[in-house]
Length: 318
Image (tube, rainbow, N blue to C red; front, side):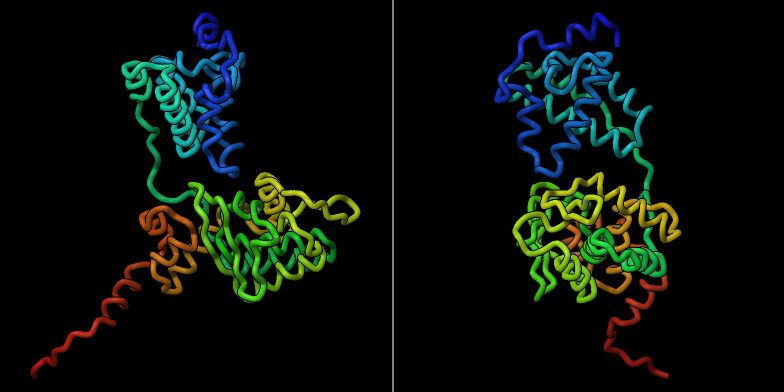
């Protein structure tokens, strides 16, 4: 962006947060989504203004098609398609708030949001983990006879056993875990939705082992641990989950994977086991079974065997 263009996009007078389109948009998000989308808007603001603005100091209502088209091109060059589209979605939502707040007229808004999403290649990124890899990850945690080992085993049990997103895992409180039923209450998940999920008896036992170390006082279920093994009764961050998974993968000699790959494995394994897609959708918290279907790795043989189970009330003559 030119310096002249950047200057015109800088707010000269601060707006009340109730009248600021970015602030209004962010305030309407779930707690787990807000930090990520704030980072996205900050990145867009910096690109638009040569690092002069962040999400709050940018004059979003001044954006026009030439600005949004240029930012789409810049994001497409810097980020993976899925990430770029998530950022562009945030941009569209902020501009919609600018329209609703009467900061933009309808024509300028229509032109500003008239840009296509970035093309995404078909198929899923990431991978599913094998049973041997998962066993190796648990083993390095169990071999670590410290509070950190118990915490990490519980974390992996939750990610693998319940298919939670990392933001959902760190958002769990002690009260959300019912040991007798192996039940977890996921609150304010993606899209602000709540859901109930379940852990196997083994996964539930690993969480209970962690609670012996953590204690039963109210607060976050999963907590940071300081040097010396002292448990801090505060919430972990999604970034901390990523670092823990990377550390344990390195120790277990497991090829690189992301926390979300536990979720892929969860969905794929349930579908492989014959669980109906609607049940998997509900457990995973997907908005549509179409998303869940992307995790179905069953081949043609599975479909052939399924049809063989259909009863046809007919006896062939001869």
